[in-house]
Amino acid sequence: MDVALRLFDREDIPYLLQWTAGAGEKALAKWAGPVFTYPLTEGQLLRYLSGSAGRQLYCITADDQPVGIIELFEIDQRHRNARIGKILIGDRARRGAGIATAAIQRLLHTCFHEYHLHKVSLSVLSDNIEALSCYVRNGFIREGVKKDHRYLDGRWHDLIELTLFCADWRTDYEHRPLHELKTERLIVRSALTSDVPAVCDYYRRNRLLLEEFGPKREDDFYTLERQKELLLDGILRERSGECLRCWIVPKGRLDQMIGSISLSAIIRGNFRSCFIGYQLDTRELRQGYMKEALAAVITCAFGPLGLHRIEANIMPENRASRATAESLGFVCEGLARDYLNLQGTWTDHLHYVLRAEQWQHLPTVL
Image (cartoon, rainbow, N blue to C red; front, side, top):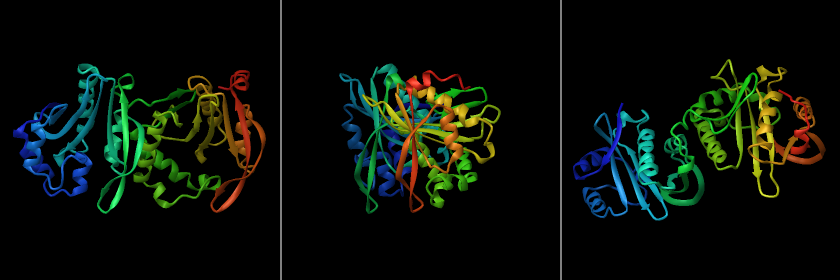
């Protein structure tokens, strides 16, 4: 399938009116933002096209057939930035075929190679998960959230602001994780949008163990829909430098997740510290996988991430987790009373710490 962009003109107006016929106010707001009012009319589109200074509206074609639109606006050549908006795959039969991702990539190529822009940004309603997934696949990072910014269907909606810089742009975000660490037996990597089924399967088969040493979760946590939301949010947070969330994949089973390691609350500056958490599939215990994977992530934290201190808080009765931490050089600094409320009960945790200078003097663990 050949996806291309050409300038939108008056002859394309009937296509757009046909694509949006019968859609409600929120459906219009999802792709058009506040520019058009419901219902969309030919007059609105003609007025929009007559005042097109500082913006370009494109018709998306697939195999030379019009299938949607995409806009580049607020084009600022002096400061070398612009915004993307009005993304719509109008032909319902062509949705889900990767056309939006391909169209965004072609527009980004125009932005960074023809217009020589430095930054491209866009915004999306927080519950528009399909659009958010598309932007994540194209490498956008979250820059902020405008709380209660749009009033639609009787309630307020948040608006997420996303940004992509030229220096960070690449064409293979969908297949190349942000971080990928390799050990003798494992690949420890950031999540991809295609990982939702494997991640969901991991949580489902380990539900009892995870709730024994963690919070009790509602049933919807174990659904594909909820895991997709959480995974997308995690990818955006990782790209913005707030955290690192790596999944553990055996080299001989690349379609299966067997555990995860998280660096959260990453603080830089004079602190350069974070918290670490880790979990492993009940079927993979006592094979040294977690120690092997943790060593790779810790090396990344003290190396490329430039951190100085990693903290871990572990329940006293979780002897396996304590033994793993201690084997890697973590030192217990004391007991934190009533540290977390888990399943309605305040629980004590042992506070472990590993500093960069301790890690440098440890023998090789891989």
